[in-house]
Length: 181
Image 1: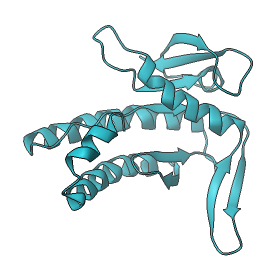
Image 2: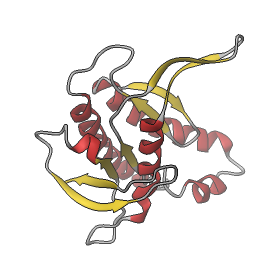
Image 3: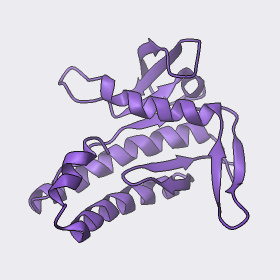
């Protein structure tokens, strides 16, 4: 969620209200991820981390992840309309998508572990999500979805436009980033 701190500050005296708001958002978005065969890795406060192709193989995982992100934006727009009718704050989000090898499995200690995903590909997706706030369209709206050239090269039926070539923390080479049109 973009701009979550000001939203949470409004609910300092109503933590149950913040919980209801966030859970409505998470429920709305989770349903779409599962519909597109994504695996929910974790909820991190105001963030959902999901991945595709594990524990089961997912054909056309790049397309499904990208279509999922697009559908999530549409559904969020509808949810925000309901929030506005109820006098609640509008929620804005960003999504980063990357494709590549990673390690998937149970990580943690002998007393508690999580099924999760680790690796350079995962880190790049997180960097792309954070980068969405840096790009705006012609109307001044933040670009909600960015994906790497590694994902773009696997997308046959999703029209994309190159946004930029960027250097992200932890990588030496420039990464070409795209958005769906």
